[in-house]
Length: 237
Image (spheres, rainbow, N blue to C red):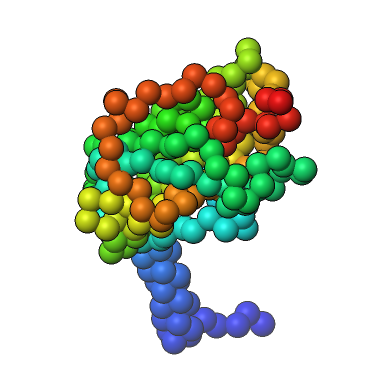
């Protein structure tokens, strides 16, 4: 004997189907809207992940590097002098650059900071090499505190490496206060000899905790790898 389908059953099934379709369409609409109109946090997170894999950011934080999160960083356009530029920590076995080792003065220049897509351009001297140019860069932060995330391609001894180059601090008038820099090799597949290897890095800071404005072009970079954060001291002695 066939079971008759009542009007009530048909209505219940129709309502359930309509509910499912509605949920699917709502989810699709939300996903599409998210793709078309991503939040500031999503834009910034995606930009940082495209520059530096999270594992290397985590490794630098374990070395004591400070990450200042947020989507409202201060304007840091300008050039700043890190002196005395002092080693804070390292994950390199038997590293000769022990905490307290004073490196060559570091000079960094930030320019073309963009509040819409959190991009910024960065040039450095004596952080990774005698002259460092970030290929891609982003900035996060809140209030007066900031973190800049850069990726640098550095050539040495017939090869090259890709480094994560991060810098944090607090804008204090025309100065940067509590400035700290972190570097980590994130790709050594084309490396020459005499540089730190993939996953190795150091953190260094401005020893007097104040990085004052400077003329970037007047600071002549010393053409040497001695006292530069990416060098292996054992290769220099």
